[in-house]
Image (tube, rainbow, N blue to C red; front, top):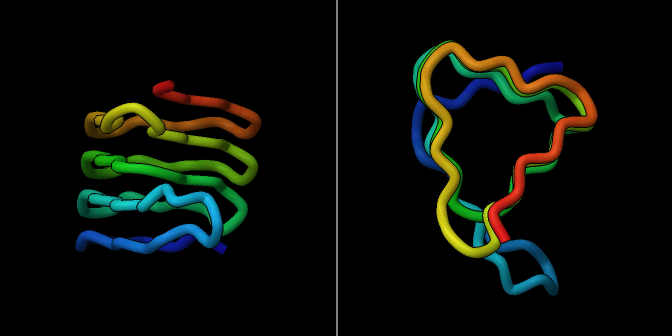
Length: 78
């Protein structure tokens, strides 16, 4: 089931020391099985499929409006 967020979400990942900060635009949906870590910003009307991974280790990742992130995609900044 997709989750939709318009506000910032911040959490700390257990044991990894990597803080997750998400900024998701209006209408953006992220499936519960997707993995998002680090500082990530996505514009409006984006969709992240299950099993997609977006990992910002060495700096923020910014994704614009209207993007579709398919299953098994890996976007990483390391």
